[in-house]
Length: 191
Image (cartoon, rainbow, N blue to C red):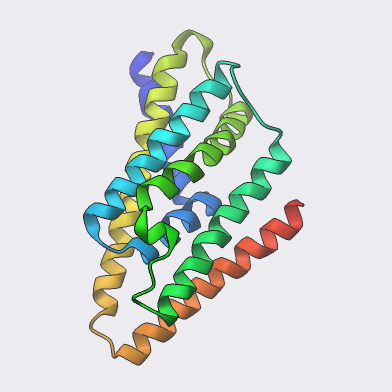
């Protein structure tokens, strides 16, 4: 039964990143902004550590926030990154907050995203007798899902470098504005 819990919750964690639009767009925007493989992996890991803290604290009853403000903050975090990507697309030398401190920004937003993960897990349910294993496996799944999204986004960016500079700019702008528009819609909807 323990192996089943580990596999089930690792799968749920990975799925939450890969098909959970909030997390997916956040990770993609982070990659578009940070770009370098190791800085991106470090930022994604800081995000995982942070969301693990709030996730565990919430599940164990030490902290928590109401779902509506958390959902709005999730959208705001994506908007924040989209705005920073748009700024950098206009001025590639611009040192935005996230470009200067990618792990710190990812960590800060990860704390908020952890409350969202806790809400999702509350909806799914956690096995009380295997709580630690389920939380551990969920976090491993989230990290695996993030690394998959990071790898695919980095691959797409590598392929995009073969296009003309004008095409690269148009594609990146379209992706950035799409992410920002979706996040703006979510923020308005959730407020």
